[in-house]
Length: 197
Image (cartoon, rainbow, N blue to C red; front, side, top):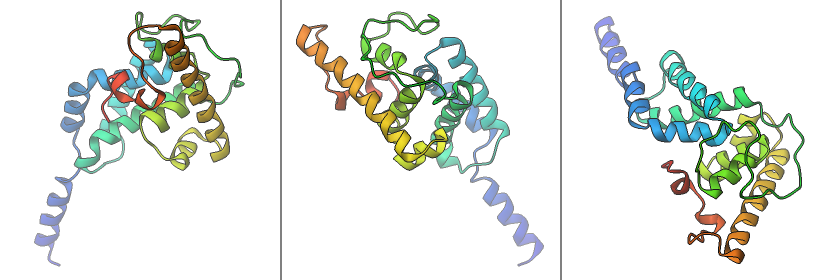
């Protein structure tokens, strides 16, 4: 291959990668959804904002990714930043069902959120991350375990605890008539959190 041809190929291949401007557009256009993803993971509005801002910075200064993967890469970077920030799995998992009306002790999450989202905030960190990454984001068990730095079995147990607690909320709502909205756990997905797939 000639040097001229090599230069053409390198320019052509670099055009396939997402640029700073691409990531800036993604974070501007999907600001609400990326922030909500950070919020539901961290359960803290201040930490969610830090996670969002560092996510943009990491996307711009980090590894190159193909342009068509940039949006999913941005979501993954936000998830990875939340994992670094919260370090899920370091606190013991409680087996006591959570109340749908309970509040996070630090009070830094958004006020007036639906009971389903509030219930996600109340999950222990590992269970919350397992729920969000697998159920809401659709990552595989193995990918979630690798992201969270735990065994596949530990991850599956955390996800099952989260699903049990979330399904308990849905059953309580159905039995008590709490609200007009009677979603099943299968319907509690990204639409509830306003986070598109």
